[in-house]
Length: 68
Image (cartoon, rainbow, N blue to C red; front, top):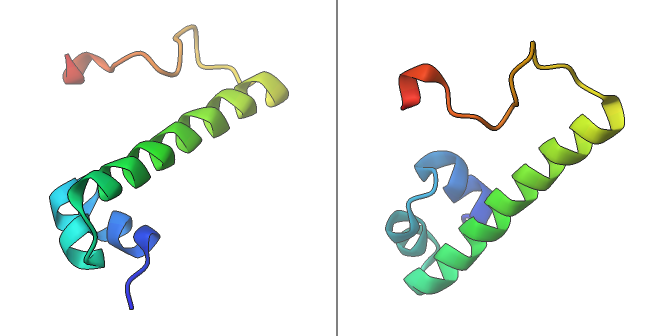
């Protein structure tokens, strides 16, 4: 049996592939992906506030030059 985290690690945020792997509807997979991405963002934000992590003068959530 595949769990959501296993499917997410294998397919990334591909709701169609995850829904097929878990045998659920696509909108359910999309909801799970959104919850996972929101949790990742909240963890990074919390770590920055608590640990006062420095990012060499650049905000950590800005897109890199190559991603633009």
